[in-house]
Length: 163
Image: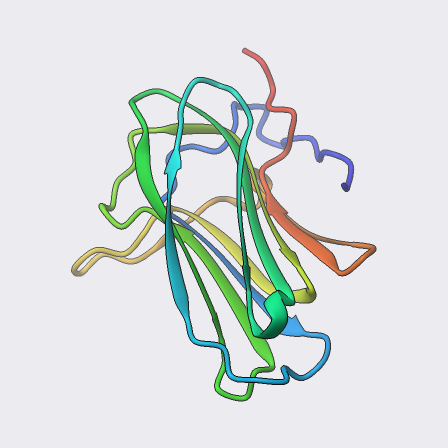
């Protein structure tokens, strides 16, 4: 795991957010067609670190992992959507709340892709609704990193600053 990055704004951790998008480039062409899938999971508050992962792609060669700690509210249903491009050269993992606004405050989060290299990653504090646009987190509120072993991350700096 890469070392935590200090927050430049000196504030708390990532505020409410509605979606996290990772687009990864497959390191090798996929051998078979992969049907897109969406898997529901519970995001649980309480400040404890939780993790959810899903394997996908031909032979389960890709893994998307979402690790987080959150506060406030009660359990929320979130979804992880996974898919590949028609040419099987791009793998996408999107973590989102289908009901829209979240009442949870994420004190830390990390999304990982294993089996591919991240080409694009973004985190949003608010997803588009009707005539509104997506609202991305500020650059200092998350980072995209690549590490050895075909693993890459989009994450908030952790541990989260206290106070």
